[in-house]
Image (cartoon, rainbow over all chains, first blue to last red; front, side, top):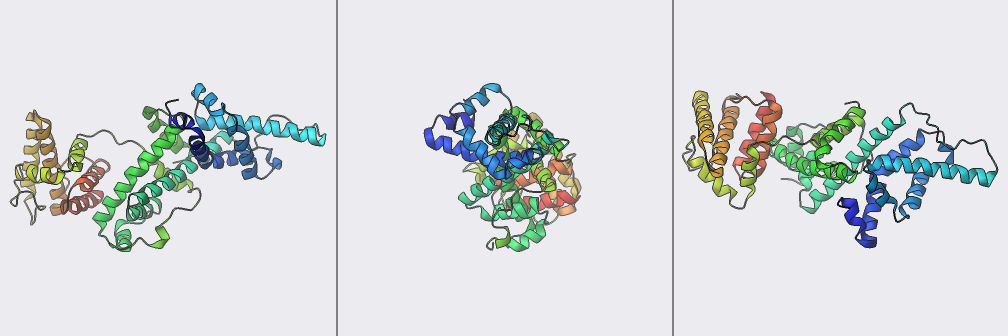
Length: 215
Length: 159
């Protein structure tokens, strides 16, 4: 229980709320992408189905403690649990409607559903890291640093252009972007460690995610 | 400095595209531990500005106005190379942490001066390695060194 999630879970309702918000923020999108790649999408709107999954599983007291004892990445654990949830949903549907022809296992329509989910995780991770970095920069009075970082690293605007927009010269813009980029790096690495990676494994995780993005 | 333009003041764009994702993921990779990291940490301390002033006024560059301002005018590139080599010698013989850090700082000041004054890279470090070093030094250094080192970093990107 020495991970961020493990520590939060010992902090009562408030800690559990933090964990739940983190999980839904980072993993809802990859699970929705996974769901769209299966033949089960008739079960409902992806965000509703994934929302139902989180509501059901996160209400179980040992759900995350069980994950921690496995040592696998959280996104894999959630995907496995989500498959089981879809199976349960189909059984309920069979029972409720009397239709017996539906298979239990989710049939994936996409050729590489794992790859699609990892790709979605990479995007979700990046979006979450951006969002938290923005929050961090705002709390520290570094709004301009954040803005310059986004313009340069996200939108690829050159420093002379960004510098003009912010009223600083290009070298100052570069230094300010560097400040925000260091915060972004740490935030991204923290999120990957919450997924179950050890510090020494984070670079390899990022390299693997880079591969699935096709970079 | 003006207020941030409203178009970039928030991040509420949903999931980034794969191209942007890949570009930003790379920022998450660790940069290898570098000798200059100790210098950057030293500069971030409360007395970092005074330490830098002393380090530069007593270093091989022997800046006239004891380290208060970046070198003005143009020093011959050969002189900058000699100073840089003198820093390496100092580093090699340094037995104390502080002396090592001073030598490293002076080394990169020589490198930055060559970039700004001659648009020449006088060290073997490539752009990908040198640019972040100069930016990190710029971030930690007091004014006016910060902007001067930032300028050197931008030059390093293009030579």
